[in-house]
Amino acid sequence: MKLLAGRMVIAASFAAALLLLSGTAARAQSSNEKIKSDNQASAYCVQTGGVVEVRKPAYGTNGSDPLLLSGTKQFCRYTASDKSSIWVLLSTLTTPKPTLAALAYYAQEPYQGGNGSPGSLYCTQLGGTDLFGGINAAGGGWLLQDDETNVLDTCIFPDESSIDSYGLFYHSDNIIRGIDLSTVLKYANPYASKH
Image (cartoon, rainbow, N blue to C red; front, side, top):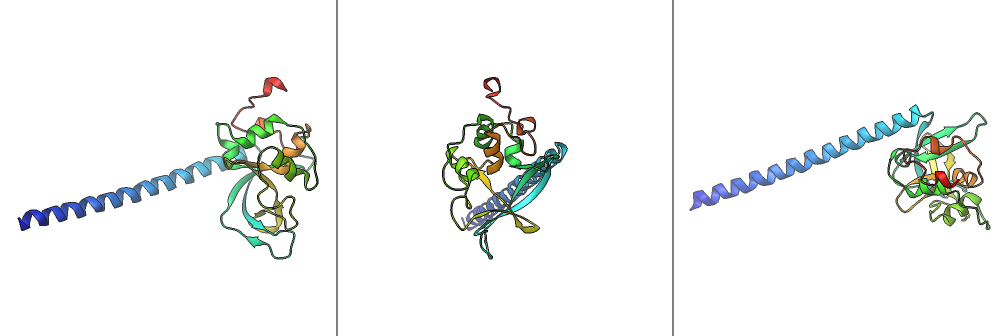
């Protein structure tokens, strides 16, 4: 009986070790897949004429000592010959599925106006949030990884897709900044026949 109990303990320990190892292997595979996906997204940005920028979120950028928040995001910046630019989150740029940011860009809803930053107000009008600033006095946005004076104001949607607020705002009035995103977004414009 003791021998059987001992074998059961050994078998249970072995099974637990296998589960632990398989979980570790699955996490490593998931991490490797994310790195591969990020590399492919970065390559696509560059192939289509963009520049990949790593940015970190900060609150209080209108003051002298902004609060740096956790995490980073990669954006693709497209700059035109007139020096205008538009930024789009890499994941928003490269997904073939619809995102709220892409749909907002394509829809070109008319701006309703208001008091505050037009880009932030337009973002709110579209159902997004200018998470780090906009109409509050403290300000905020995405700081360039190696230049914390370079602040990007983006419109973030509930599905976490994002395009810069002013790029969306200007596009609502048929003004292209940087590049017409309909030429590079992997999700095609579903309203194309309506415009």
